[in-house]
View 1 (cartoon, rainbow, N blue to C red):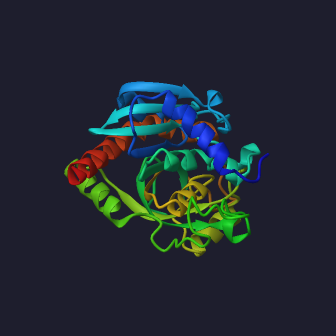
View 2 (cartoon, rainbow, N blue to C red; view 1 turned 60 degrees about the horizontal axis):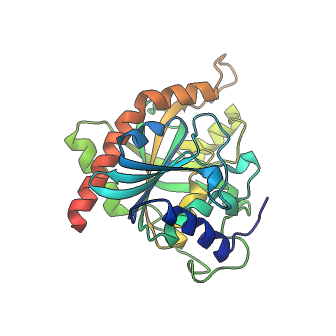
View 3 (tube, rainbow, N blue to C red; view 1 turned 90 degrees about the vertical axis):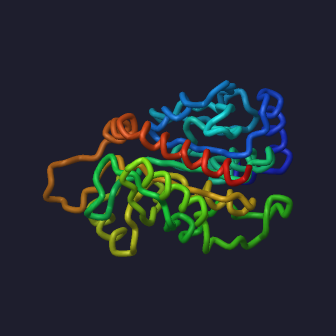
Length: 285
Protein backbone atom coordinates (compact mmCIF):
# COMPACT_ATOMS: atom_id res chain seq x y z
CA UNK A 1 0.00 0.00 0.00
CA UNK A 2 1.34 3.42 -1.02
CA UNK A 3 0.42 6.25 1.34
CA UNK A 4 1.67 9.07 -0.87
CA UNK A 5 1.34 9.62 -4.60
CA UNK A 6 4.08 11.76 -6.09
CA UNK A 7 3.88 14.13 -9.03
CA UNK A 8 6.20 11.85 -11.00
CA UNK A 9 3.93 8.82 -10.47
CA UNK A 10 0.92 10.77 -11.72
CA UNK A 11 2.91 12.11 -14.68
CA UNK A 12 4.03 8.61 -15.67
CA UNK A 13 0.46 7.32 -15.61
CA UNK A 14 -0.84 10.36 -17.50
CA UNK A 15 1.89 10.04 -20.14
CA UNK A 16 0.89 6.43 -20.75
CA UNK A 17 -2.79 7.32 -21.13
CA UNK A 18 -2.02 10.29 -23.38
CA UNK A 19 0.10 8.10 -25.65
CA UNK A 20 -2.70 5.55 -26.07
CA UNK A 21 -5.68 7.79 -26.80
CA UNK A 22 -6.24 10.06 -29.77
CA UNK A 23 -8.26 12.78 -28.03
CA UNK A 24 -7.77 15.48 -25.43
CA UNK A 25 -10.60 14.74 -22.98
CA UNK A 26 -12.31 17.65 -21.23
CA UNK A 27 -14.77 15.66 -19.11
CA UNK A 28 -14.07 12.70 -16.83
CA UNK A 29 -16.59 10.13 -15.64
CA UNK A 30 -16.36 7.52 -12.89
CA UNK A 31 -18.88 4.67 -13.05
CA UNK A 32 -19.88 2.85 -9.86
CA UNK A 33 -21.03 -0.71 -9.15
CA UNK A 34 -23.09 -2.19 -11.98
CA UNK A 35 -23.06 1.09 -13.95
CA UNK A 36 -20.85 0.02 -16.85
CA UNK A 37 -23.52 0.48 -19.52
CA UNK A 38 -22.73 4.14 -20.20
CA UNK A 39 -19.40 3.15 -21.72
CA UNK A 40 -21.31 1.43 -24.52
CA UNK A 41 -22.62 4.84 -25.63
CA UNK A 42 -19.12 6.24 -26.17
CA UNK A 43 -18.40 6.60 -29.89
CA UNK A 44 -14.99 5.80 -31.37
CA UNK A 45 -13.93 4.20 -28.08
CA UNK A 46 -10.30 3.58 -27.17
CA UNK A 47 -9.93 1.17 -24.26
CA UNK A 48 -7.05 0.81 -21.81
CA UNK A 49 -7.16 -1.88 -19.08
CA UNK A 50 -6.12 -0.48 -15.72
CA UNK A 51 -3.37 -3.07 -15.30
CA UNK A 52 -1.46 -1.58 -18.23
CA UNK A 53 -1.32 1.92 -16.72
CA UNK A 54 1.66 2.58 -14.42
CA UNK A 55 0.70 2.92 -10.74
CA UNK A 56 -3.03 2.64 -11.47
CA UNK A 57 -5.06 0.85 -8.76
CA UNK A 58 -6.82 -2.29 -9.94
CA UNK A 59 -10.58 -2.76 -9.56
CA UNK A 60 -11.26 -6.18 -8.02
CA UNK A 61 -14.96 -5.97 -7.09
CA UNK A 62 -17.71 -7.55 -9.20
CA UNK A 63 -19.43 -4.93 -11.34
CA UNK A 64 -16.22 -2.92 -11.90
CA UNK A 65 -14.62 -3.81 -15.25
CA UNK A 66 -11.38 -1.95 -14.60
CA UNK A 67 -10.94 -0.12 -17.92
CA UNK A 68 -10.43 3.42 -19.14
CA UNK A 69 -12.58 4.31 -22.15
CA UNK A 70 -11.79 7.42 -24.19
CA UNK A 71 -14.03 8.75 -26.93
CA UNK A 72 -16.95 11.04 -27.73
CA UNK A 73 -20.08 11.31 -25.60
CA UNK A 74 -22.72 14.00 -25.83
CA UNK A 75 -20.59 15.80 -28.42
CA UNK A 76 -17.60 16.13 -26.09
CA UNK A 77 -14.29 14.23 -25.70
CA UNK A 78 -14.51 12.18 -22.49
CA UNK A 79 -12.39 9.83 -20.41
CA UNK A 80 -14.53 7.29 -18.64
CA UNK A 81 -13.57 4.95 -15.81
CA UNK A 82 -15.40 1.63 -15.90
CA UNK A 83 -15.08 0.84 -12.24
CA UNK A 84 -12.95 2.13 -9.39
CA UNK A 85 -10.75 0.88 -6.58
CA UNK A 86 -11.99 1.15 -3.00
CA UNK A 87 -10.37 1.74 0.37
CA UNK A 88 -11.76 -1.58 1.65
CA UNK A 89 -9.85 -3.47 -1.04
CA UNK A 90 -6.65 -2.60 0.80
CA UNK A 91 -5.63 0.52 -1.09
CA UNK A 92 -4.72 3.80 0.54
CA UNK A 93 -6.86 6.86 -0.12
CA UNK A 94 -3.94 8.29 -2.09
CA UNK A 95 -3.93 5.24 -4.36
CA UNK A 96 -7.67 5.16 -5.05
CA UNK A 97 -7.64 8.83 -6.02
CA UNK A 98 -4.65 8.61 -8.36
CA UNK A 99 -6.97 8.31 -11.41
CA UNK A 100 -8.46 11.71 -10.57
CA UNK A 101 -4.96 13.20 -10.41
CA UNK A 102 -4.27 11.68 -13.81
CA UNK A 103 -7.43 13.33 -15.16
CA UNK A 104 -6.28 16.64 -13.71
CA UNK A 105 -2.87 16.38 -15.40
CA UNK A 106 -4.60 15.47 -18.68
CA UNK A 107 -6.48 18.77 -18.52
CA UNK A 108 -9.92 17.52 -17.50
CA UNK A 109 -11.93 20.29 -15.83
CA UNK A 110 -15.26 18.55 -15.12
CA UNK A 111 -15.78 15.27 -13.25
CA UNK A 112 -19.06 13.35 -13.26
CA UNK A 113 -18.98 10.73 -10.54
CA UNK A 114 -21.54 8.01 -9.88
CA UNK A 115 -22.04 5.30 -7.30
CA UNK A 116 -24.47 2.71 -6.02
CA UNK A 117 -25.75 3.68 -2.58
CA UNK A 118 -28.09 2.46 0.10
CA UNK A 119 -31.17 4.61 0.59
CA UNK A 120 -31.52 5.99 4.13
CA UNK A 121 -34.35 8.47 3.69
CA UNK A 122 -37.72 6.70 3.98
CA UNK A 123 -39.01 7.94 0.60
CA UNK A 124 -36.04 6.57 -1.36
CA UNK A 125 -36.54 3.30 -3.22
CA UNK A 126 -34.24 0.93 -5.07
CA UNK A 127 -33.80 2.23 -8.61
CA UNK A 128 -34.14 5.92 -7.69
CA UNK A 129 -31.54 8.38 -8.95
CA UNK A 130 -30.29 10.89 -6.38
CA UNK A 131 -28.27 13.99 -7.23
CA UNK A 132 -25.66 14.52 -4.52
CA UNK A 133 -25.92 18.04 -3.13
CA UNK A 134 -23.42 17.55 -0.31
CA UNK A 135 -21.61 14.78 1.53
CA UNK A 136 -20.63 13.53 4.96
CA UNK A 137 -17.02 12.37 4.97
CA UNK A 138 -17.16 10.09 7.99
CA UNK A 139 -13.74 8.63 7.21
CA UNK A 140 -12.27 12.09 6.85
CA UNK A 141 -13.76 13.30 10.11
CA UNK A 142 -11.96 10.36 11.73
CA UNK A 143 -8.64 11.42 10.19
CA UNK A 144 -8.58 9.49 6.90
CA UNK A 145 -8.36 12.10 4.16
CA UNK A 146 -6.77 11.65 0.70
CA UNK A 147 -4.94 14.97 1.18
CA UNK A 148 -3.19 13.81 4.36
CA UNK A 149 0.57 14.27 4.23
CA UNK A 150 2.79 16.83 2.48
CA UNK A 151 0.80 19.01 0.09
CA UNK A 152 1.80 19.09 -3.58
CA UNK A 153 1.24 22.76 -4.37
CA UNK A 154 1.22 22.13 -8.11
CA UNK A 155 -1.93 20.03 -7.58
CA UNK A 156 -3.78 22.42 -5.30
CA UNK A 157 -3.83 24.39 -2.03
CA UNK A 158 -3.04 22.99 1.41
CA UNK A 159 -6.55 23.76 2.71
CA UNK A 160 -9.09 23.46 -0.11
CA UNK A 161 -12.59 24.82 0.45
CA UNK A 162 -15.34 22.17 0.36
CA UNK A 163 -18.37 24.41 0.92
CA UNK A 164 -19.32 23.99 -2.76
CA UNK A 165 -18.05 20.47 -3.42
CA UNK A 166 -20.84 19.78 -5.93
CA UNK A 167 -21.12 22.36 -8.69
CA UNK A 168 -24.36 24.38 -8.75
CA UNK A 169 -24.37 24.91 -12.52
CA UNK A 170 -23.84 21.22 -13.25
CA UNK A 171 -26.62 20.35 -10.83
CA UNK A 172 -28.92 22.80 -12.61
CA UNK A 173 -28.13 21.15 -15.95
CA UNK A 174 -28.92 17.73 -14.45
CA UNK A 175 -32.26 18.98 -13.13
CA UNK A 176 -33.15 20.49 -16.51
CA UNK A 177 -32.26 17.28 -18.36
CA UNK A 178 -34.29 15.16 -15.93
CA UNK A 179 -37.29 17.47 -16.25
CA UNK A 180 -37.14 17.51 -20.05
CA UNK A 181 -36.98 13.72 -20.20
CA UNK A 182 -39.53 13.25 -17.41
CA UNK A 183 -37.04 11.21 -15.39
CA UNK A 184 -37.68 11.36 -11.62
CA UNK A 185 -34.66 12.80 -9.81
CA UNK A 186 -34.17 12.84 -6.08
CA UNK A 187 -31.62 15.01 -4.27
CA UNK A 188 -29.80 14.45 -1.04
CA UNK A 189 -26.69 14.14 1.12
CA UNK A 190 -24.36 11.18 0.58
CA UNK A 191 -22.45 9.68 3.52
CA UNK A 192 -19.29 7.65 2.98
CA UNK A 193 -18.33 4.75 5.24
CA UNK A 194 -15.29 2.52 4.81
CA UNK A 195 -17.02 -0.84 4.23
CA UNK A 196 -16.96 -3.56 3.08
CA UNK A 197 -19.61 -4.67 5.59
CA UNK A 198 -23.03 -3.15 5.13
CA UNK A 199 -24.37 -0.98 7.93
CA UNK A 200 -26.07 -2.30 11.05
CA UNK A 201 -29.60 -1.07 11.79
CA UNK A 202 -28.19 1.11 14.59
CA UNK A 203 -25.70 2.65 12.16
CA UNK A 204 -28.51 3.28 9.66
CA UNK A 205 -30.50 5.13 12.32
CA UNK A 206 -27.40 7.12 13.30
CA UNK A 207 -26.73 8.15 9.69
CA UNK A 208 -30.33 9.29 9.29
CA UNK A 209 -30.08 11.31 12.49
CA UNK A 210 -26.99 13.23 11.33
CA UNK A 211 -28.58 14.21 8.01
CA UNK A 212 -27.53 11.55 5.51
CA UNK A 213 -29.97 10.51 2.79
CA UNK A 214 -27.85 7.75 1.20
CA UNK A 215 -24.75 5.81 2.21
CA UNK A 216 -21.95 4.19 0.24
CA UNK A 217 -18.29 3.17 0.25
CA UNK A 218 -16.75 5.43 -2.38
CA UNK A 219 -16.92 8.81 -4.17
CA UNK A 220 -15.99 11.25 -1.38
CA UNK A 221 -12.18 10.83 -1.66
CA UNK A 222 -12.39 11.34 -5.42
CA UNK A 223 -14.52 14.45 -4.99
CA UNK A 224 -12.08 15.91 -2.45
CA UNK A 225 -9.11 15.37 -4.76
CA UNK A 226 -11.03 16.73 -7.75
CA UNK A 227 -11.93 19.89 -5.86
CA UNK A 228 -8.36 20.19 -4.58
CA UNK A 229 -7.30 20.23 -8.22
CA UNK A 230 -9.87 22.84 -9.24
CA UNK A 231 -12.23 20.46 -11.06
CA UNK A 232 -15.99 21.00 -11.11
CA UNK A 233 -17.95 18.00 -9.83
CA UNK A 234 -21.39 16.51 -10.38
CA UNK A 235 -22.32 13.47 -8.31
CA UNK A 236 -25.23 11.06 -8.77
CA UNK A 237 -26.13 8.04 -6.65
CA UNK A 238 -28.16 5.14 -7.92
CA UNK A 239 -30.17 3.96 -4.93
CA UNK A 240 -29.48 0.25 -5.22
CA UNK A 241 -31.10 -0.93 -2.00
CA UNK A 242 -32.99 0.36 1.00
CA UNK A 243 -30.84 0.36 4.12
CA UNK A 244 -32.23 -1.81 6.92
CA UNK A 245 -33.06 0.21 10.03
CA UNK A 246 -34.53 -2.51 12.24
CA UNK A 247 -33.22 -5.82 13.56
CA UNK A 248 -36.78 -7.15 13.42
CA UNK A 249 -36.69 -7.61 9.64
CA UNK A 250 -35.53 -10.85 8.02
CA UNK A 251 -34.32 -8.95 4.94
CA UNK A 252 -30.59 -8.90 4.14
CA UNK A 253 -28.52 -6.59 1.91
CA UNK A 254 -26.28 -8.24 -0.69
CA UNK A 255 -23.88 -7.02 -3.38
CA UNK A 256 -25.88 -9.01 -5.95
CA UNK A 257 -28.87 -6.81 -5.12
CA UNK A 258 -26.72 -3.75 -5.76
CA UNK A 259 -25.59 -5.08 -9.15
CA UNK A 260 -29.14 -5.93 -10.22
CA UNK A 261 -30.29 -2.41 -9.47
CA UNK A 262 -27.36 -1.01 -11.43
CA UNK A 263 -28.09 -3.11 -14.49
CA UNK A 264 -31.74 -2.04 -14.40
CA UNK A 265 -31.36 1.70 -13.80
CA UNK A 266 -27.88 2.24 -15.24
CA UNK A 267 -29.09 3.06 -18.78
CA UNK A 268 -31.41 5.74 -17.39
CA UNK A 269 -28.53 7.31 -15.50
CA UNK A 270 -26.42 7.13 -18.65
CA UNK A 271 -29.10 9.00 -20.60
CA UNK A 272 -29.12 11.76 -17.99
CA UNK A 273 -25.34 12.16 -17.88
CA UNK A 274 -25.01 12.18 -21.67
CA UNK A 275 -27.65 14.92 -21.72
CA UNK A 276 -25.76 16.93 -19.11
CA UNK A 277 -22.61 16.66 -21.23
CA UNK A 278 -24.49 17.85 -24.34
CA UNK A 279 -25.91 20.82 -22.44
CA UNK A 280 -22.52 21.69 -20.99
CA UNK A 281 -20.84 21.33 -24.37
CA UNK A 282 -23.43 23.64 -25.95
CA UNK A 283 -22.86 26.29 -23.29
CA UNK A 284 -19.11 26.14 -23.61
CA UNK A 285 -19.27 26.09 -27.40
